[in-house]
Structures are given as C-alpha cells and as structure tokens.
Length: 260
Length: 265
Image 1 (cartoon, rainbow over the protein chains, first blue to last red):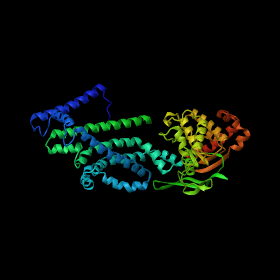
Image 2 (image 1 turned 135 degrees about the vertical axis):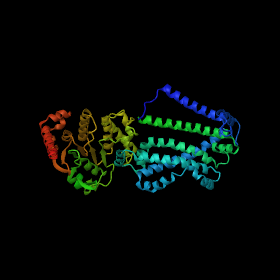
Image 3 (image 1 turned 45 degrees about the vertical axis):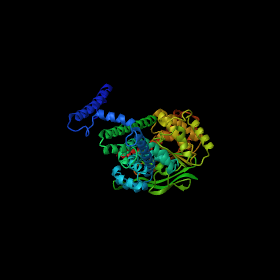
Image 4 (image 1 turned 120 degrees about the horizontal axis):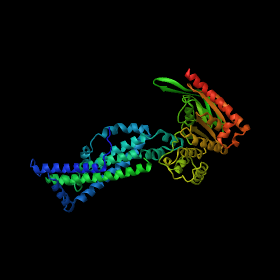
C-alpha cells in the first residue's frame, strides 16, 4: 500500500542524509587504502578536476564546450526522434494497416541497445555528425513512438466518432483529435525519450573524433585519469537532470492547462 | 419524400458464439422536417437505430436511407448529438462549433455568421473562448446542439441528449429544444427513454419493444398537439397539465409498461 507523503522537513532531512551518506561512504572507500586513488578518486579529487576542466582545455576543449557539442548532437537526435515518432505513432493509431506493417519490425528492433549501432554508425557516417545522431535517435525514438501510439489508441471512442460524424478527414482526425488527446502521454514519453537519448550519448561519442563529453571520457580513460572520467559522468548526470526538470515543467504546464 | 427511411432493418449481434437479434422488422419513414422520438426500455436497440442512421453502425439486414442515399459511413449531413456530449476538451466553445463547418465548404465569412447565430440562439454569448470543462453540463450540451445545428444538416440525430443532465437543467433544455425546433424546423430523430420528454418534443413517437427490438406502435402527437395548441404554453409544466398531454403520456407509458410486465413473468 502507498504510504502518506512525508512532512516537508523530514523529506529534506532524508534527502540530505542520503546525499551525505553516499559521499561519506565514497570518501571512506577512497581513503581506506583498499584500492589506489587512481582506481577510486575521492569526491574532492573529482570536484577539483571538474573545476579544472572548466578552465583548462582537455581533449581539445574545456568542459562546457564539450557539453555544448554533446547537447547539439543530442538535440538533433532527439528532435529527429520526435519528428518521426509522433507522426508515425499517430498514423499507426489511425490506420490499422500501418500498425500491422510497422509493429512487428519495431517490436523486434527496439530491444537492440542503441550502442549496438556503433559499428554501423561508424561505417555509414565515418566521423561525421550522422553517426552520433543515429545512435541518440535509436535511444530516443522508441519511447516517443510507443507513448504517442498508446496515448492515441486510448482516446475515448466518442471523440473519434464525433470527428467522423463532423466530416473530418483522416489528417484532421489525427492532428486535431488524436494528437491533442495523446499530448499528456506524448510528453511523458518525451521525458523517457530524452533520458534514454542522453544516456546513449557516451556510446555515440565513442566514435566522434574531436569533441563531446563522451569523447572527453574516452580520452580521460586513455590518459588513465579516472577523475576526468568521473567529471564527465557528473556533467552528464547534472545536465540530464536539468533536461528532465525542464520537460517536467512542460508536462505540468500542459496538465494544468487541461485542468487535470 | 421521406428524409430517413428504415427499410426492413435487422441487426444481429454475435456474442460468445451465439447470435442474438437486437432489432427486427424495423420499418419507419421520417418525413422531411419531422421530429420523431423513439422511446423504449433500455436494451431495446433504440440507440442502435440512431447509430445506423448516423453510419456509426450497420444493419445486418435491410437498409437505412437518408435523403434517398443508403447510409454507409458517418458524415456532416447527419449530425449527431451524443448523450455524453463528446465535445473536444482541448478546443474552445467556438472551435468546437466550427469543427464540422470546416469539413463542408462554407466560406469563412458565412461560417462566422452562422457560428455567431447559434452562439446567440443557444445563449452561449461570452463563453466563446471557454473550454468545455469550464462549463456546466447543460451549457456543454448547448454547445453540442449548436455544433450539430450549425451544419444545417439534412437530419439531426439525438441520442438521449439530456440523459446526463440534472432534472432542472433537463426541463430548461427541453423547452429550448422545442423553441428551436418550432422556429427552425429540421428532420430530427430523437432517442429517449423518458416518456414525457418524447410526448413534449415529438411530432410522432415510435414505441419499441425489446428483445428482439421491434416497433410496437407509432403515435401521431402532432395531430393532437396542433389543434390543442400546446405551443402557446411557454412552460413544460403547463403543457403537462393539459388533458390531451396526460392522455397521451398515459397511453405511451402503458405500452412501455406492458413490455416490462412481459419481462418479469
């Protein structure tokens, strides 16, 4: 059974205790000497390295430049996933034959991890922009399609009947009935999709030669600088969290407008 | 010429591997600009009749014609008012009323004029930019009625349109529909299980029996209503007090009661 919500003070105390416990455990392991600092940098090593990366170029660029080029690739892959996923999901929900045509292939392909496309991304696009965009797309596309399709399929039949009796074309049925009705589900899908797309980034940037947080981490690994790798992990985590918070705001604004 | 024709219509459903006859021997002609109400106990197939005229369902025998063409699919020439309103929640009142007009070729200026006319007629002035969830049930159903009337359709199909409203709102809406129907006569097929509503609104009443749904009797209300001049009374309760109304209501009620009796024994 669900428990009632915690009082605010307790909520924040527990959050702080969790974070503190994590850092304490990490510090203890780093200081204990079980393993070398090379294998397990202490939190302050990472913070120091993170600050250093912001001012001192590593792998050709400072950290926020790497982040910006990662965000650019992520944006392209994500937007492409949205531009293909939403219309395809609507078409599948409206036309049974398109559903039949696409679903079996999609259901099989979506279980292939985005990173498995790395060899093909490299073969097809070399070190061009296409490779990482393809991999991010592979991560971000399934949730957009699934949530658009499910959201559109769950539209109350009465709205579809109303649109048909009012003479709406298939195009208007999809854009003016299915799409707005599916918006809450689509936005929830976008959050999952952005998360998975952003996660796929490191894999995508393994094959990029000149910039990106993933690239920075690969170079950090080559230089046996674990604190650099961890700084990259921290940057990915922080930016991922910010993307999710932004999309959650959009979701709340839409739900508020709908009176949900 | 009849606007709606049910020609030997039959509807069989397949359920759990068994056939069950929902409607049988339905023969009915609704004249141009006639208001016909179908009453019957729940499960008699009256809603199915309306849905077949709308093209949302299809007969398994016989055919349904509207304006001499066999009905094959839904279209704006047969506008439906649903019990559950079915207004698009993400569209404003104005956009909901405009939705169907955009499917039929009506020039924008004419479109605007017509929408304004029905907003005025249905007392929706000031709510043009409101969303359905901001309106009461009665107001929502006014929007749905405006959305259907504004198309100027060949026939209007109403499926228990006041069934989801509270009793007071319902009476107001019935009075308004009478006002609208007399001022602006249209061919209407009106489905209800409320006897008084049917007697008050309709030119003719079709009483149905259930399982299988058949037409039990067709009653001509108009030939009684007009000489008795019901429409001079503005309020439904004044009409309901007239002996001619009471007599008709009792007659329809007994026909329906007989069915229920059969069911129980």
